[in-house]
Image (cartoon, rainbow over all chains, first blue to last red):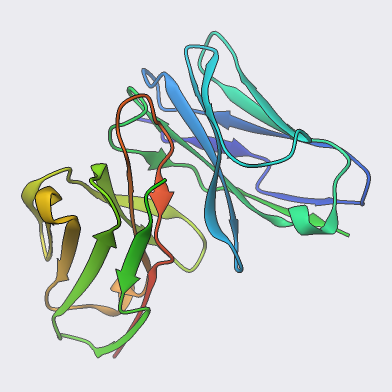
Length: 112
Length: 110
């Protein structure tokens, strides 16, 4: 079966711009979680969606937002980009949100 | 939230050697998982192991939830095992956030 698909793979943006990242989960998985990975902070939880509802949100500013569609695909948006937003953004899907995660290949965002 | 501590932070092995990676949790943990991140950044789920022992080829994992730790065993290591190994878990209930450790960087030399 197809894995978790994240697009785009690489992105370069300028400070102040906004960006939208996409994640298509494994077919049948209804939970999608997003994580930010940086060398200094490691893997940090952004948010989790299940059946279009955000169930948990991490400690990130309101510039970070997300949503999930009826087909379980999810998007996250970062507005007013800052240099510190440069990171690898990973999404993971699972059946229920607390069982085994499958991660996508990630989107590497560089803010210049 | 729970704290996750992994040890050792770095490990260098010769091909064919065995190793044990450890993950300690500050509080009771649910839904414990082990991941391997390859040099290209891809995170691969190795085990979903909330308790007990599982084996998959040369890898096996044991979680003792009551004592708040988990172990990952790698036997007969290969150069392709190189990368960063993460453990992660959550506190259960309505908490769907996985907390990750800082990882163990494993280098297997030929």
